[in-house]
Length: 134
Image 1: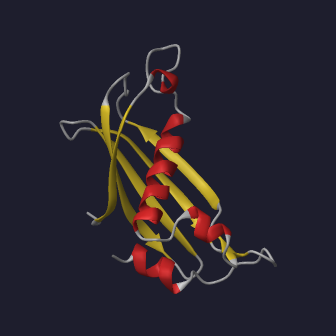
Image 2 (image 1 turned 45 degrees about the vertical axis):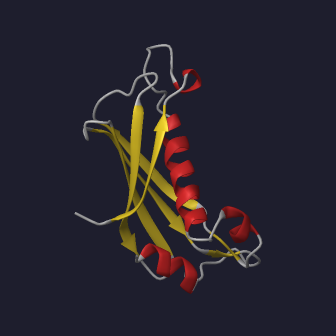
Protein backbone atom coordinates (compact mmCIF):
# COMPACT_ATOMS: atom_id res chain seq x y z
CA UNK A 1 0.00 0.00 0.00
CA UNK A 2 1.25 3.48 -0.88
CA UNK A 3 2.13 5.77 2.00
CA UNK A 4 -0.18 8.64 2.80
CA UNK A 5 0.65 12.08 1.43
CA UNK A 6 -2.04 13.84 3.41
CA UNK A 7 -5.15 13.22 5.47
CA UNK A 8 -8.09 15.45 6.31
CA UNK A 9 -11.44 15.00 7.99
CA UNK A 10 -14.86 16.34 7.07
CA UNK A 11 -18.34 16.02 8.52
CA UNK A 12 -21.12 15.70 5.98
CA UNK A 13 -23.74 18.44 6.02
CA UNK A 14 -27.30 18.73 4.78
CA UNK A 15 -26.19 20.38 1.52
CA UNK A 16 -24.09 17.26 0.76
CA UNK A 17 -27.10 14.91 0.89
CA UNK A 18 -29.41 13.98 -1.99
CA UNK A 19 -33.10 13.00 -1.98
CA UNK A 20 -32.17 9.39 -1.18
CA UNK A 21 -30.58 10.53 2.09
CA UNK A 22 -26.98 9.80 1.08
CA UNK A 23 -24.08 11.98 -0.05
CA UNK A 24 -24.74 13.17 -3.61
CA UNK A 25 -22.15 11.51 -5.87
CA UNK A 26 -20.67 14.79 -7.15
CA UNK A 27 -19.84 15.85 -3.58
CA UNK A 28 -17.16 13.15 -3.51
CA UNK A 29 -15.11 15.19 -5.98
CA UNK A 30 -15.79 18.33 -3.95
CA UNK A 31 -14.46 16.55 -0.83
CA UNK A 32 -11.45 15.16 -2.73
CA UNK A 33 -10.56 18.51 -4.28
CA UNK A 34 -10.79 20.28 -0.93
CA UNK A 35 -8.40 17.69 0.53
CA UNK A 36 -6.08 18.22 -2.45
CA UNK A 37 -6.12 21.99 -1.88
CA UNK A 38 -5.40 21.46 1.83
CA UNK A 39 -2.49 19.18 0.87
CA UNK A 40 -1.07 21.86 -1.45
CA UNK A 41 -1.50 24.57 1.21
CA UNK A 42 0.17 22.36 3.82
CA UNK A 43 3.25 22.30 1.58
CA UNK A 44 3.14 26.01 0.65
CA UNK A 45 2.13 25.16 -2.94
CA UNK A 46 -1.43 26.45 -2.73
CA UNK A 47 -3.76 27.15 -5.63
CA UNK A 48 -3.14 30.89 -5.29
CA UNK A 49 0.59 30.31 -5.81
CA UNK A 50 -0.03 27.98 -8.76
CA UNK A 51 -2.38 30.52 -10.38
CA UNK A 52 0.46 33.08 -10.28
CA UNK A 53 3.02 30.65 -11.72
CA UNK A 54 3.98 29.79 -15.30
CA UNK A 55 2.19 26.41 -15.14
CA UNK A 56 -1.25 24.97 -14.44
CA UNK A 57 -2.36 21.56 -13.18
CA UNK A 58 -5.76 20.81 -14.70
CA UNK A 59 -7.45 17.47 -14.12
CA UNK A 60 -7.54 15.27 -17.23
CA UNK A 61 -9.42 12.31 -15.73
CA UNK A 62 -11.28 11.41 -12.58
CA UNK A 63 -13.27 8.46 -11.30
CA UNK A 64 -14.90 7.17 -8.14
CA UNK A 65 -16.03 3.80 -6.81
CA UNK A 66 -18.78 3.74 -4.21
CA UNK A 67 -18.38 0.88 -1.74
CA UNK A 68 -21.00 1.96 0.84
CA UNK A 69 -23.19 5.03 1.28
CA UNK A 70 -22.17 8.04 3.32
CA UNK A 71 -24.94 9.65 5.38
CA UNK A 72 -25.69 13.00 7.02
CA UNK A 73 -23.39 14.12 9.86
CA UNK A 74 -20.87 11.35 9.34
CA UNK A 75 -17.24 12.06 10.10
CA UNK A 76 -15.20 10.98 7.08
CA UNK A 77 -11.42 10.84 6.76
CA UNK A 78 -9.96 11.51 3.32
CA UNK A 79 -6.57 9.92 2.78
CA UNK A 80 -4.51 10.99 -0.25
CA UNK A 81 -1.86 8.72 -1.74
CA UNK A 82 0.24 8.99 -4.87
CA UNK A 83 -0.81 6.46 -7.48
CA UNK A 84 1.52 7.46 -10.32
CA UNK A 85 4.09 10.14 -11.08
CA UNK A 86 5.36 10.91 -14.57
CA UNK A 87 7.41 13.78 -15.98
CA UNK A 88 4.41 15.97 -16.78
CA UNK A 89 1.52 14.38 -14.87
CA UNK A 90 0.51 12.67 -11.66
CA UNK A 91 -2.39 10.62 -10.35
CA UNK A 92 -3.70 10.83 -6.79
CA UNK A 93 -5.86 8.26 -5.00
CA UNK A 94 -8.39 9.30 -2.38
CA UNK A 95 -9.85 6.94 0.19
CA UNK A 96 -12.89 8.17 2.11
CA UNK A 97 -13.35 6.17 5.31
CA UNK A 98 -15.66 6.29 8.31
CA UNK A 99 -14.58 6.50 11.96
CA UNK A 100 -14.29 2.69 12.11
CA UNK A 101 -11.84 2.72 9.19
CA UNK A 102 -14.30 1.25 6.68
CA UNK A 103 -13.67 2.56 3.18
CA UNK A 104 -16.88 4.05 1.81
CA UNK A 105 -15.57 5.56 -1.44
CA UNK A 106 -12.35 5.51 -3.42
CA UNK A 107 -11.56 8.11 -6.06
CA UNK A 108 -8.70 9.29 -8.21
CA UNK A 109 -7.69 12.41 -10.08
CA UNK A 110 -5.14 12.59 -12.89
CA UNK A 111 -3.47 15.97 -13.23
CA UNK A 112 -1.44 17.20 -16.18
CA UNK A 113 1.13 19.99 -16.06
CA UNK A 114 0.70 22.63 -18.76
CA UNK A 115 2.67 25.73 -19.62
CA UNK A 116 0.31 28.57 -18.76
CA UNK A 117 1.13 30.54 -21.93
CA UNK A 118 1.47 27.87 -24.61
CA UNK A 119 -1.01 25.36 -23.08
CA UNK A 120 1.45 22.60 -23.96
CA UNK A 121 2.70 19.90 -21.61
CA UNK A 122 5.70 20.70 -19.50
CA UNK A 123 7.59 18.85 -16.79
CA UNK A 124 6.27 19.19 -13.27
CA UNK A 125 8.17 21.84 -11.32
CA UNK A 126 10.66 20.51 -8.77
CA UNK A 127 8.59 21.91 -5.88
CA UNK A 128 5.54 19.91 -6.97
CA UNK A 129 7.55 16.73 -7.55
CA UNK A 130 9.10 17.00 -4.10
CA UNK A 131 5.78 17.21 -2.23
CA UNK A 132 4.42 14.26 -4.20
CA UNK A 133 7.44 12.15 -3.25
CA UNK A 134 7.24 12.80 0.51
